[in-house]
Length: 429
Image (tube, rainbow, N blue to C red; front, side, top):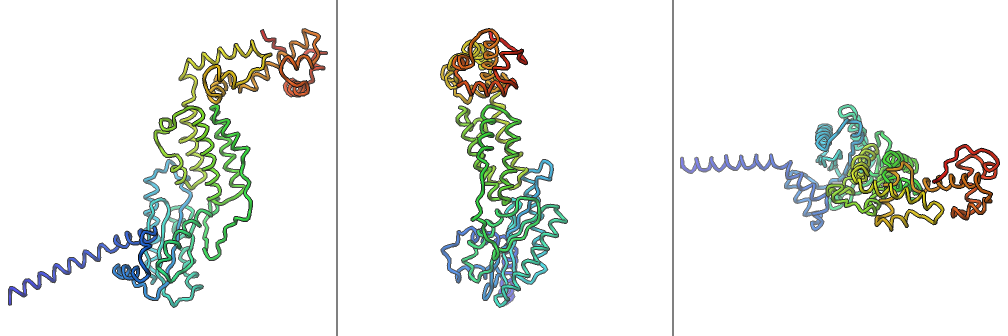
């Protein structure tokens, strides 16, 4: 009997140890279960089967209602040199704050830290509670979150409260809709509370895309004008924000701009895999939410490496080729010359030639040729009896177009210039 008693006592101790271990592992088991559920991986289970699994995790779901709250922190750009590790630490701190605030509530809950400055909160509410009362409780809880996160982390907070549901199987869709609504937050730095019951997408309002600015950016980027490119990207961002202040529209506009600039990289003949060290630029931009971070990313990740690769100082042969081209242009200024024609003769892309020309001369090709032809026009007006129509034909211009260019550059018409002394005469030898 003593032996049986000892064995029985040992079995009880082992059972208690096992029970304690199971209890200790429940939080991590819940975490894994909720991630699978909210990601839609448990779609094949019925509500009854899901309820059974949740009961195993000490969640009573009988006669309950379910809600989901999405929390997004913003204002990370105010932190100097914030890294990915900093984001994870801030997300961890925010999740702990939210969990502590929820613990004072009688409702069952589970906090999910996505480690990207966003937090998910799953709530199980008494099924007999009036929906209006539930929404009031959730709104008060959300305002408590905002107040605490503002005070402790000094960051702006956007919170979306889902509608309630009595079906566990609807939770994946509920969570997806709620998290998606975060993208419609105002891009301006402020706290925002969005109720999915009142949430309407303003899709009926047209959004004007700044196509002209996009073309200017791509052109400046293609020919290596770094400061102009960055200044226009900033204006592009401001134009998007002016048209639509929601994060989603601004982000999609910046993604489209990335596609246009990526196309320019490919047309330049550069190998983007080498240039950007095999990084997925689309994936990187997709993960950025703050306007300031987006602008920094364009400057450091996209523009700077490409501009550096274009430096003619790294290619003495290219500089010598441009010097030879300048001599040819002076000799052939009265011919039907074009950048594309010279690029074909030099066996390089027009993008590359245009870029190198601008970097070495400080002037784009069209402006350079126009200046030379205006100088030639002044020289012919002073030294010959040719009429403006004849000079225009020699310089491959329509007379009216030549007169406009001349007046724009010299501040007077060709006729006035022929009768007096022009501001400057630079004969072409």
